[in-house]
Amino acid sequence: MYTLGVDIGSTTAKAVILENGERIVASSIIIATVGTSGVQNAVTEVLDKSGLRMEDMTAVVATGYGRQTYEQADYQISELSCHAIGAHFVFPDVHTVIDIGGQDAKVLSLNERGQLANFAMNDKCAAGTGRFLDVMASILNLKISDLEKEAAKATEPAQISSTCTVFAESEVISQLANGVKIPDVVAGICSSVASRVASLVRRVGVQEKVCMTGGVAQNGGVRLALEKELGVPILYDDKAQLMGALGASLYAFNKENKKNNT
Ligand code: ADP
Image 1: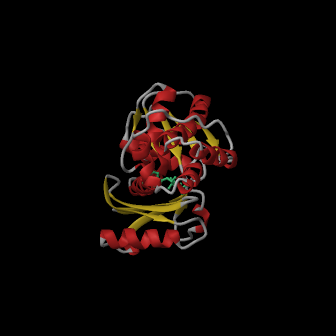
Image 2 (image 1 turned 135 degrees about the horizontal axis):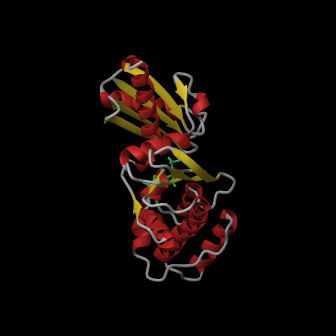
Image 3 (image 1 turned 90 degrees about the horizontal axis):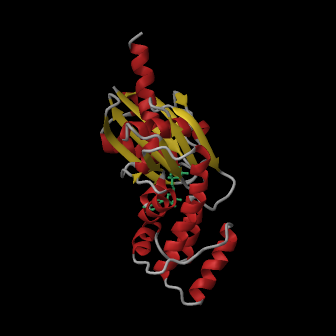
């Protein structure tokens, strides 16, 4: 049985096809915001990569901020549930999931069975989200994927004291004007995100094991800064950005499997 999960986020559309709820056949990530053709492109790409057709999919589940916009879905499920399902699949003994996406950050607390027990969310402010990093990378003329490498070269990480993205932007510009080196500024930016997210984590409690999901998880500078803030190791898998789509695909499989067994 093949199932398709699509995660329509604020910044990217992701798609994952699973075979029998076990094996990832193909995945795709398209940079596009909600309300654009991003989701369609992600689905076209994942089908092309898999050599399968939409008719081969037993069930389709949409998740993410824009899930209501995808009419081909059989079910629409919240991204909180999907990240929990995806993270539990990849890391069976994880109890805390830190999901930092393009415009929000969420912390999920999972019970022993991997079910969502509690959560905290910041969707009101860009600080502590991918948006903050995107803005800072553009000021520094760096690619988002280069932040990790730059942060690793820091010798004296800068302090970014502004909690607002707009003020932090001015602060970074003035630090650069005062000769602070780019790697030190980048390390300060990563720490600023980590410190905002750490306070969200403390709201639900730090229960090991802890993992990161969402696009920002790919930034090792933020992961390292969060490990320091929280004092625990953070598990990471290179499917981090796909975790919601993976969870959606797994949800689809479980739902169909249950139907077939009753
Ligand atoms: P959403 O689901 O809200 O659309 P994602 O989970 O896809 O968001 O995360 C998008 C964010 O991930 C971007 O805003 C960017 O900051 C970050 N990101 C994307 N690719 C990379 C990368 N290669 N390295 C570091 N960060 C990345």
